[in-house]
Length: 460
Image (cartoon, rainbow, N blue to C red; front, side, top):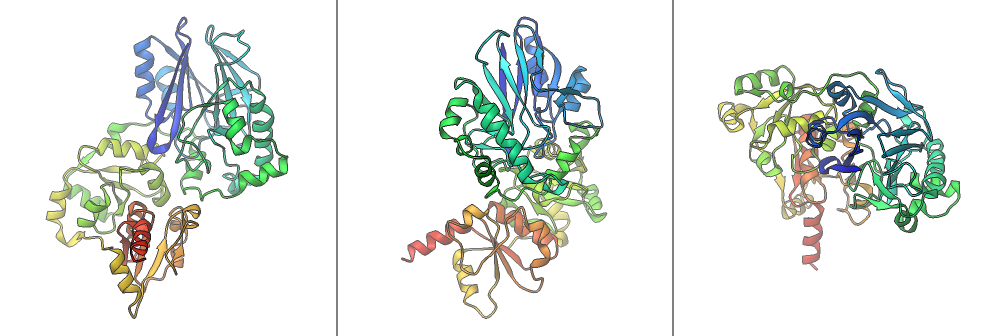
């Protein structure tokens, strides 16, 4: 058997290629949208990809099922509750998919979503103990999938939580301890609240260490898995819906189009929004007015989906030699309305000085002085709830980054604003978004809350 995990750090997303090395028949599970890596591996090893399985309708990325089906002729499989605009193979509980000696068995494990499935992998059909189980977003290492994402679609967290209880406590925990656990996500994903950095585990390890796998009543389980979930990024609903649809295929060449300064500025004047993926320091030193800074060195796709609207036409300013990567990462969450990227940013800034701005940034000393002045600024904390619980700037307003785009009306236009996060990354994003929406007296705190706390400790 050939079994490979492909892990995408910026989305904390795992996908899998499974093949029978004798027959060469292969299946890909939970693929990302840029599928060349799977196809290159299959070609190098003489495999034929004949099926693509999505464990559920993913909300945090756009799956590559249509791209793989288009390029290989593979069938697309989902749990039997799934409904799509494109042809699919409905996979029922207990159904077996033979690739030769290697056999995949479907387990219906609803709860994160109604159609969620897991995939048992057996090296040989007669093996009493499966090699592993691909759990999608039902079971993570250290956590389980959140059941609250479909509330806006009329499916309550309580209802899904009770489905998840059965899936995790009764079905997955009934597997032998030795079975390896391969989830669809790891630490950093907003699909859960306590995901481990480990990319695989075993049923036995999860039974012993995962809070949601400990014996408990159904009511207790629902209460614990629904509590304390972070605000979901704004694009989640968009991607979950788009994964059901017969959409356009990914084409990197069509999206990564270089534009000279004149073309770029012309499209900007027509209403396209500039997403500047350079680091906060470079952005602060000089950028086009109204640009939204989402640094590429971080969770670029997720954070772009948090603060940008998928309906916006976009223009990209990328770090040097990372233009195609930046556009691809936007496409991974379905943000395809990219007109192109600025081929020579520095030249553009020089030719349009009237459109170039510097981003104001405050040190802790600056902020303390301003707070003691006659017109103290409004301090906005864009960290998550758990971070804020560890300490906060007195008098600050808590608006997590994921909530900020929907709560802009709460921020006064006539008052100076200082935004902070933990270290200065998210605050640059938030401050640029506020300035984009007309809050021009907005700056961010250098070093974030860490710098504030350190200064407080140094002062005794």
